[in-house]
Length: 153
Ligand SMILES: [Zn+2]
Image (cartoon, rainbow, N blue to C red; front, top):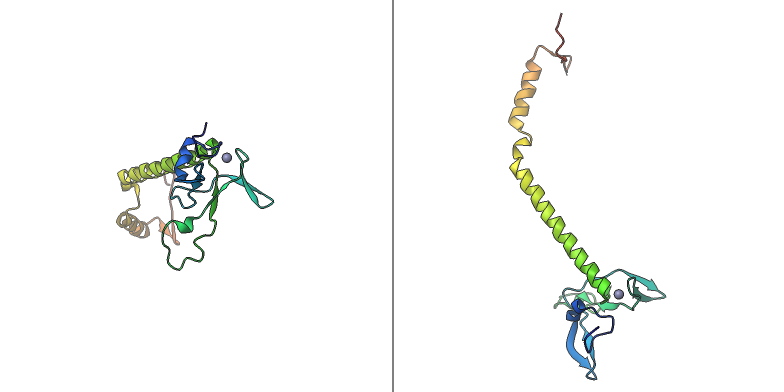
C-alpha cells in the first residue's frame, strides 16, 4: 500500500521521484526533472500515454530541466514518460541489471583478449613467411605449390 501523499499505484522505489512539496497538504509533487527518470514501456491512446503494465496514465519527464542548459531549445519539453507502478520499477531494475552484466561481460572479454594477445597477428613473422614463400622452389606462377605430404616422384 502506498504511503500518504503518493498515488495508490506508487511502488516504494518510485517515491524518490516525488518532492516533499505537497498540494493542499496531501498529494506530493512529481519531480519531472529527477536525474534517475527514464521512460518506461507505454502505449499512446488518443494522445494520452498509458503504462502497458498497469494501465495508469504515465507521468512526464522533462530532462531539459535537469540543469541550466545554455541555448536549450525548450527546457520544458516533455522528453519521456514514466510510470511509478511495481512492474515499471521492476522493468527499470531489469534494465540496470542487464546494463551491468553487459559491462562486466565486456570487461571479462577484454581481459581474456589481453591474456591471449600472443594469438594476434605478428606482422614480422607474416612478412618473413611471405618472403620465404616467394623464395621457395614451390612458388611458381604466383602460387605457392603445396602438398598433402604424399611422396613426390
Ligand atoms: Zn504502471
